[in-house]
Length: 203
Image 1 (cartoon, rainbow, N blue to C red):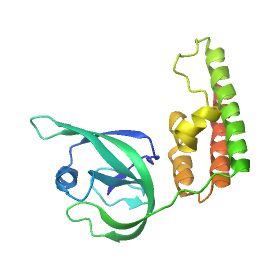
Image 2 (image 1 turned 90 degrees about the horizontal axis):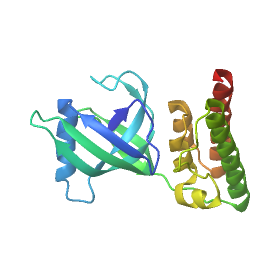
Image 3 (image 1 turned 120 degrees about the vertical axis):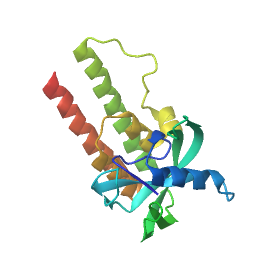
């Protein structure tokens, strides 16, 4: 397990710089495992620091699949990961030699027609806010600006949209913990209105 100061969302890219001895050991063990693709669990730290241990952790997190690893001569590792499935910690084990836990995989909820329609409507609102933010700054829209539309929802989903937006760790954690799509839409909607208010205030 890798407790961090941010909540990793499924589908989100996570670059890491691993320097603590305990996590260097964890990385070696993950890469040596023969029971599937290498990876580890990521959970948000509720209180405490990423470095040194002694932190208090949330129990819902995301598996991080390791894509690439590079190391420099000092042993510092640069790891490229991607979030996959959500899990819930059922038991925390002793942090020896690194954080460990027993976990249960969480199933993804189905998307009803009503939840999909609400999601697309929220995507339209997100797009309007982003376009307005660029207009307020007098900055041209980037060519790769996400559309936040029906096709984009099929490709990225709400987690993908949330990963692209400046929302806080608490909102991201709430999205991970939400048990159905209506709850996720409501959480992301509140977060969107929060950063829309910040944009309007800064203008």
